[in-house]
Amino acid sequence: MNKKEIAEIKKYFSEDSDLLTINRVVTAFVDAEKNVKCKTNRLYNVIPQDESELILAMLKKTLSGRIGANLLEYAFPKDAILEGGQQQFLWAVLKDKFTTDETVDSLINAIVEKVEYVSTYSIFSAHCTYSVLKKNKMDEITDDAEADTNYNFIITAICPVNLRIDGLIYNEEQNAIAKKEDSDRIVEMPTDGFLFPLFNDRAPDVNGVMYYTKNAKKPNTSVIEEFLGCEFSMTGPSEKEVFHAILGNVVGEELDLDMMTKVNEKIQNFVDQTANDTEVATIDSAKLNNILWESGVSQEKLGELNKVFEHATDNKPLTAVNLVEKKTVVTVPSVTVNIGKGGADKVRTQVIGGRKCLVIALDDPEVTINGMELKMIGKQPAVPANTEMVQIAPDEDEGPVHTSFEDGTAPF
Image (tube, rainbow, N blue to C red; front, side):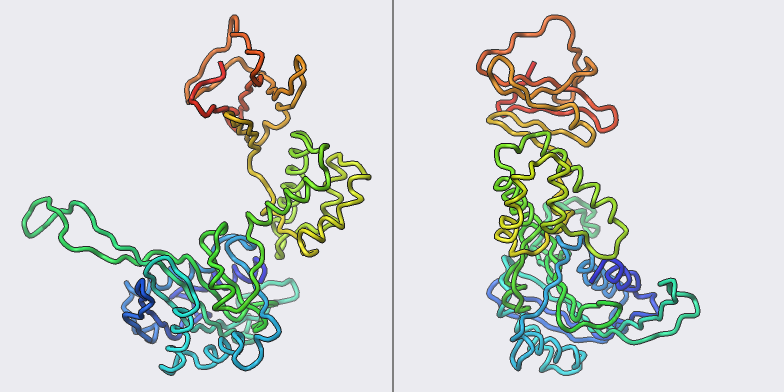
């Protein structure tokens, strides 16, 4: 599913929509011992509005986030279409439309059995129907558009349930502030979820499933591999780690601050240029070759790129937005320098007195240290022979470049 298709479903996913109908909703509460303590299966339109709005918000949350990070599309393996495979299982649930207790029980039990979860949790699953309107030749939906087909889907949210014991409350009966005697189990927004089937080319696609994770760095692989039966692929942070490994293996000693900055800027430009594209921008070996060449990597080094890229990624492209650093962080023992956007051209490495130093051009004598502005005038203390030399230049648009030391001291 691309950005437009996800946005289309999310746009009409509301109680007021006349195109998308939430038919039935299944809810369940699972305790820490994997016991299903309660379960309901109701028509959505008979659920009290204050409750239905909360359920809607939780289900809709599983359509949010960044594609390639929070929203991950997985294709079912070949054996999933066989009897007993997970694709066939989900297809049977979809066709049943939550009309029989047997199917509902099989879905809930499969989640409980196969998903590993760190706490008690609730399951919200809905069967929905979206009337897909025809688009005109300009790829637009007009006011007089007619429905072309129906997209029936199951959307599921897995939400943690946390015990909340508030310290003090206002007791209206006693007209006093007192300690709350009981506790509440609060259902939080989902950490995981899935949508089946996919909505590709504005039509149902039963060959895959979309998985949602709140934590892009640590998705729940048990949902992907055990319950959905798909092969887990790299997360956003994993893609960045692989990218860094590729750079290290290909560029080697030529990789310095200037080159890293140029590479990051070129990838950011690529992301910006493709921001309105429906498909997520990716970087394959050929695209990375061009980026590195334009950043100053020698042709001799680039001769190894194809082999290194194929070995590191199994020749699968990397998601461009997952490779971008919003700021440059330079770290040496006891010192971390954060360089905001627009400040990279003021920073360079230089050998001074036989030692490699990080130098930041100072255009303005005003420097902010720990939130306090200082004037750097007059005689400066000498830099000890065994220390790195750092100069700091604030950036008018992005704020100062901050330098911090692990022991809490300032560089001046």
